[in-house]
Image 1 (cartoon, rainbow, N blue to C red):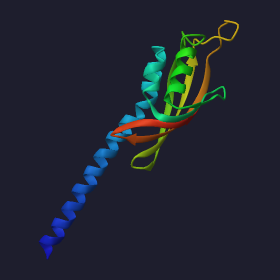
Image 2 (image 1 turned 90 degrees about the vertical axis):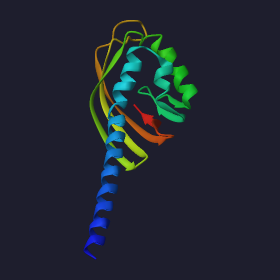
Image 3 (image 1 turned 30 degrees about the vertical axis):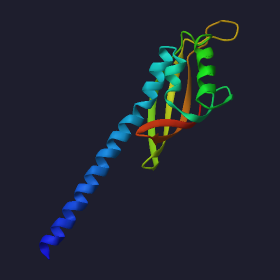
Image 4 (image 1 turned 90 degrees about the horizontal axis):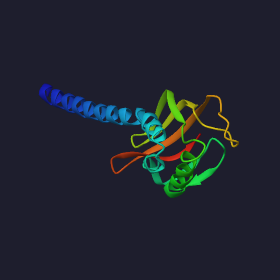
Length: 149
């Protein structure tokens, strides 16, 4: 009887350790999402930025434009990053995660932007914002399924 309890306890511990290791991997991947977004932005690469998004992403920009789908997201950002945001950078400041389910998580991150220009071409002062992203693990990869900046 005692050995049966040890076996059951050992199996429970093994399962808990495996689940924790997976969540650490997922947590690390999600914590890196703002940096990956910012790196693609700094390269002014709308395609690389779009690869972080799900094919069916809904994305509301800081200006209130509602982008639907990865193609729409990529087209918008390629145009933006080739225009008045061509010299801009985004720096992630603080990131917070909240898992809704093992395959669904909210990533909230604050940012600082520098180097963008007004519509008349004059430089804009540095500014700050907050991005909220709902991410889903699809085929082993975390993708943004909806976001609002």
